[in-house]
Amino acid sequence: MSKFYATIAGSRGPATRTGTRNSGIKAAAQSYDGSVITYLSYNDKDELIIELWCSDYSRSCGDQRLFRGTLQELKDALGG
Image: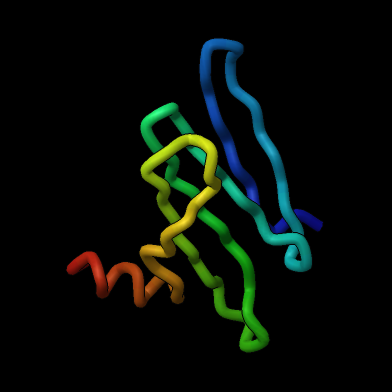
């Protein structure tokens, strides 16, 4: 059963993908100038874990991790 759902839209229209608890899901938005990558997964405590990565160039899928934690930790980090 799908636990994750991702959508993306571009010049060829929308596309969707799903991920399971075991697979997680990865979404990457990339340009020649940089990339932003998001990973969603679950940890052993059944908590949603979010990882945000970025790169200053297009040949890398995230060489710098900006954040790893729960949704609440992300909200707290962003002041929300």
